[in-house]
Length: 394
Image (tube, rainbow, N blue to C red; front, side, top):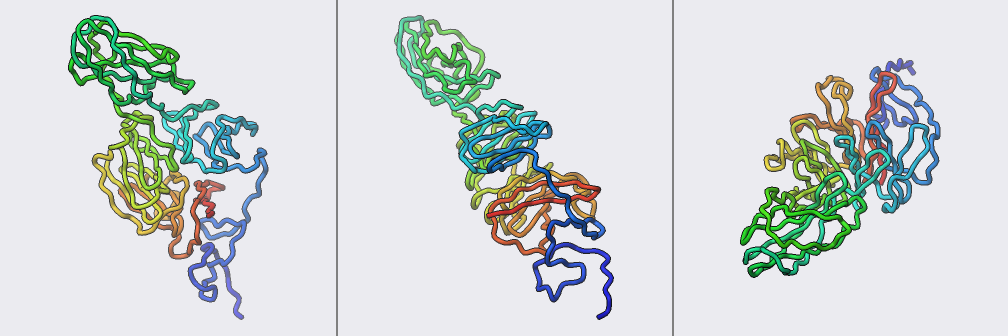
């Protein structure tokens, strides 16, 4: 047999029988990397840094690293010690994260929260129930009055307001407003809003400590601050999170809910929703739109805001649940793409998505994917070589 000179390898391949391979194709590639020249070299080993029983959902916001283990969420410190920042999680459920303005929002489909260093708090405030109203003595003119209450967090964030309660008063009356205290330990006060006589506009009339569940208003003052959070609610605990152009997007089943603009913890639960054909597994924002991957297809929604989105099918196959890291385009392909691209694992292999809704499957001509549901993804730079690393499992 004539000797063959092996000048380089193209990597693992399984889309054709081995007897049809070229000398560049590998049927097995275990614990090796292939660089851009085709050279194969052994991967580096690993060192155990921290003890855990069933660690998963590792994430870094660029400063702080978090991971889940059992029913707790932990911070991984610089010396590789750990500290619990949240407990009571659904054991084993994978977490999704997104960091905006130094705060990391997380969810696992059942619970959610917001992390700032070692502190975890609720992701949005549960609105209070509609207040109880009782007529009392005062100087309100006769007529109809609408009343509602909100909770206010210690950082000034205000909850959504529940359905407006209406009371009809006779002359020389007042209103006693009752509302239970919030169980959220970060809530410090309640704001009360009352309309003018026979009006629909709710105006701020006063505030009280969260623990104070009742107060009376006997003189109708003319407020100037109108309620802005009527019928608003927190985003639901999401399976997938993403941030794009001033809003957080949260996927629950086949629906993607989005926050109000620059108010990440409030939404209109009726209007702030995008429906899809099946469960959403991927949210991958780029400069001019968002890639959404479902169980059955991948879409690009272009435009600056949901009110202007244009939806287009980019792949007739779905994606696996998992992160979609951002990577410099020049390091992803030999074509030296400009700008950044999003990376994700589809049901037919790794893909990248560029601005403008152009998506490319990077291994469709070499690798046939097996059945899988989840992926753990990262973009790695090592010794001048760049890899999209994805661990997939069912």
